[in-house]
Length: 107
Image (cartoon, rainbow, N blue to C red; front, top):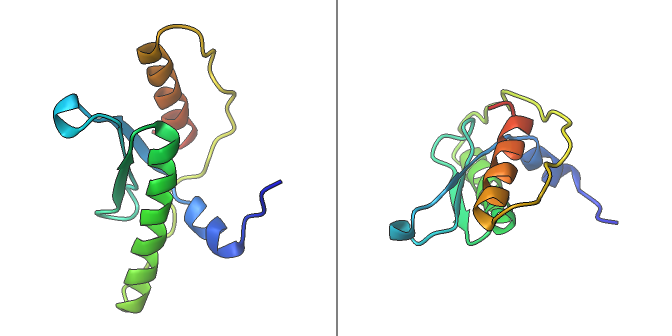
């Protein structure tokens, strides 16, 4: 069982948007946080992009605190949704996961 600290929970409360990157841009996925202007990251897989995204959110929040800037509150909350059926091609699976994650975050 993974334990989440209060500090990690703060970062995890921010919703994110996931977009696939084109092959021209190196492939993989982009994650950005609408509430944290300019905060984004990427990864080869959705899981890695989300992990990297939360690392970026942590750095964004800590840096802005050090600079004395106001940290915005999360503008939306996670909705409980079931994971989609994962049958089909890799492209279909990716699309289904993207849609499910984005729906959970209220996009």
